[in-house]
Amino acid sequence: MFKASMFKTRLNIAAITLGVGLLSIGNVVTAQDKTVSADAKTPTALTKRASSTQSPKGFLLKTIEHDGQQYRYVLYVPEDYDATKPYPTIIFLNGAGECGRDGLKQAAVGIGPAIMLDVDKWRFLVLIPQKPDIKDRWEDDDKLVLAMLDVTKKTYKVDADRLYLTGLSQGGHGTWAIGAKHPDLFAAIAPVCGWGDVNTAAALKNTPIWAFHGEADMTVPVKGSIEMVEAARAAGGDAKITTYPGVGHNSWDNAYREAGLADWFLLHTRKK
Image 1 (spheres, rainbow, N blue to C red):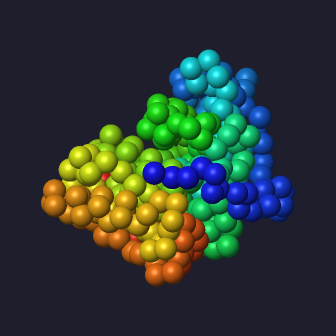
Image 2: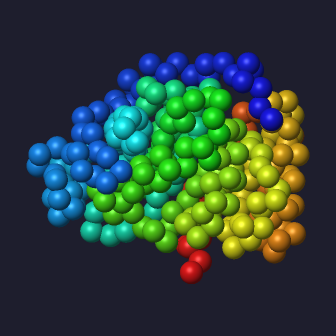
């Protein structure tokens, strides 16, 4: 569905990461949270560290050990984060151009720059995993994403009823796929310039959906989003789509910077 050869470097990664001062904490954690620094080996210690006024804020570089391998990812912690109350949380899935193992590129396109431009709008914890291999699909790394979420829940006060999923291009596909695979996990999803399997759309009938796509997208045609939204609606779902005339594959700048997506997320809590 996507054309990998059409992806080029979208931003000066070094400039953007150095410009916002990405912070490496240095701790390595497993999905079971067993390998952490000596001062934080228990859930109680983790909670105390998270609630400390000295707890780092901003874009934090993290490492997790999963299935015998180490993976780097980014967690955004807003300045007003308060560990005494549950905090709305977003998982963002990157596109093909940001795949790899460096742990940084995925924060430089999409939601990351949108947060940097308007931190007051994005008062969420934002988990930004990186898909390791461009040839894989996000659903192939589903367990890795959930392991990162699990560790984040142990360290930070994630509001399980206000957990949201979004992503662009390959990550837009991943949003449709992982959202359908775990329909009871997310309060709402927002796939951007993605595509999906219409046979899975019925699983999302209880999950609010806002899709975005450029009408001139030659990499992932807009019909990929339209067909999924129509299939979700046909199943009784609450799904809508915003398309951008004349916009190509990069509809994510519009979606994350201009559409009011952050406010829309907060209108929704998980249905039980």
